[in-house]
Length: 508
Ligand code: HEM
Image 1 (cartoon, rainbow, N blue to C red):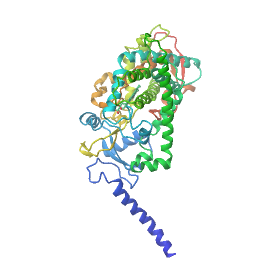
Image 2: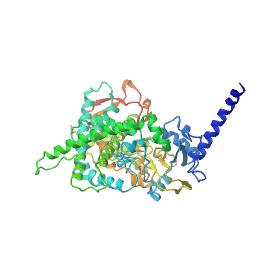
Image 3: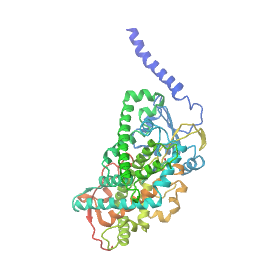
Image 4: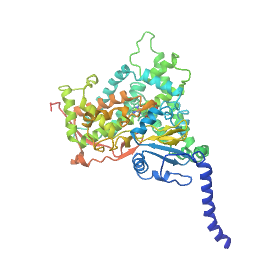
């Protein structure tokens, strides 16, 4: 009995001492004694993980920045993370220390599915990344090619308009679903050609891949136990299956493209190359650097889906939500669009050019409703002195662009949707000031800006020209909820249901 009582007292004591020892000897072994940025208190083993509970991370991290300053440190399991939340520090990380901050952390998913970050989004900073990015900017997203793809975007715009019309103007449409399907089809058309039987399978696999790239899975929080945790959680096997689906589906798509190429007459002009055609042509002709393998070409295709689908549909659903909540802004934007296309029964994308007010609406929407609140995580490649502190090599970095773009120190009435501010404070929207970061900055800045902006504007023009919009069931504009959820991008939590009444092109 006495022995039992003793062990009841001793067991928790010994366990606590052991935990503290493991924590001190193992988890803090690299950062002990360093001048790290401040941060909230940490528990043994889990570090700061308990501080993440509650709100969505971009909101939670804004609260922590209010308490600990614009550069704070968290220990997530074994991993050091610093969060940046001011334009000055964002500029320092993307200008003065650009090279040190230009890498990406690797997770189990990026190792297994993206073949050790063998794509653009997740590639460590280095030669392969440079080569892949060059393909994107010099070959895939040239001004000429984006112009060609605008016709695809308009075709998707026509389909979207037809689907909304089919609802008859009396019942509510789920605009969220329609916009996502439009964005998926646009990327599919531009990447794979007109029709792709594999679209659903491949998009599902890409979404599944992204689910495991937050860095918050157990395997990625405790890299030293990565193998063991990968086995007992079953994650390694799951990721290998996802990799297999992606790989075999892309093989089928590539084979179909090669067959199409082989059946072409040699003198036949190649006017309608899709992105996979371009990548395979470069590979066939030996124009690619030797470091670029077939797995990297597949990685680029996955990036196009990752980068160009939910970001585009998210900003469109947020913009429509803001326009509905601000009828005066909606009226001005519609007036501009309807006067520009006066009397036309359909929109031609080449005419979607000079719409300054709509452009202001999109810029303001990207400020307030950024689809990528943290950009994409960075990884510090060498120990550096930064913002008055030491940041050890291997630290993960999040830039809270969402918080920076809503910071009242830099933005007047920062939480208000007000496109007029683009005119009155144009300099604030200049990317070189690092307080406007919807597309990130520095070397890793989004290479799809022109492509993304073109899709956003073409689709908005179609929606505003052809329809008048109201909320169903007589709901008042100010009652529309703006709750968020995080998936591939920061999207509406609840779908946007709206009643669209066809507009008959009268001048307003
Ligand atoms: C509204 C639309 C879009 C938004 C808001 C957006 C935003 C972003 C952001 C914030 C980053 C990270 C930048 C950084 O780390 O500093 C990024 C990277 C990237 N985006 Fe976009 N993007 C959009 C559209 C697109 C499109 C249409 C594509 C291609 C089809 C694309 C492809 C990429 C790629 C490949 C990267 C990785 C760049 C690298 O790591 O070097 N994005 N994007």
